[in-house]
Length: 162
Image (cartoon, rainbow, N blue to C red; front, side, top):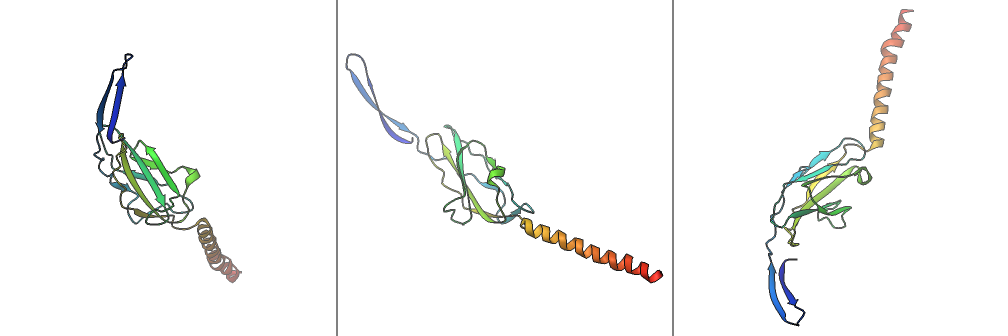
């Protein structure tokens, strides 16, 4: 972990040497959120499994990422909280699919010395245009309208000619 560490070595004769070792404490740069775009909509109907993407960050000691997804802008009590991600993207699995609603996400980079870049500003996105029941109701309404049109244009006309 970053900061000063005392390292002590002792040989079999009891000779002891202590040295202070300093691990770098420069945090990596913040990653830039890429997708989903702030204010964008992901998916059309039902639950969605968005892919979160951010800019890749490099550091000599290596970098991992932490991702938070929440229903509040300050991301308190995140519903998804992942650490140790090694790629600059993450796709939610089906088991963590998001239902219709507004969500917020943010990411941070952490280097091998545990220096944290700090969290990015939360980005919002909307999951789904309609809930599944709304989609089924819309399809049912379209079927009823087509049925009425067919009845009025075909069946009523046929009676008129006979």
